[in-house]
Length: 106
Image (cartoon, rainbow, N blue to C red; front, top):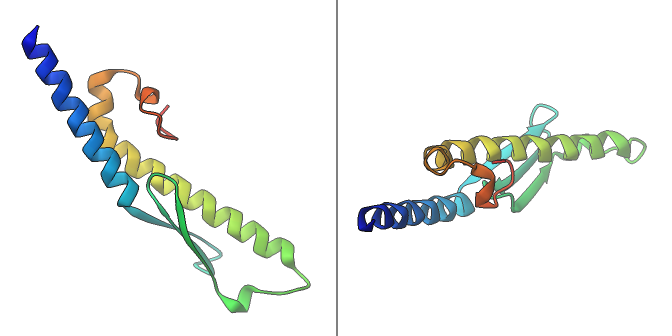
């Protein structure tokens, strides 16, 4: 029983370390061949948005909005991939990955 508790504690420590790493790791999502870029943490916190001035057209705001959404989605997808990479081995040992409370691991 003591061995099981030690293994559970070790997995919890590994999980906490992986979560801390994901909170700091950054991914960059982009749309429009890089005209719009979103930098976020792998935990989903948006840190910055960069918009190339040549895409800004006051007569076509919808395209810019679509590009921002596309870049956000790309960043979220890359964050999910990084989460799966970092948390995958831990999730395999615990069964339900959704129990970690991280988006994209359910």
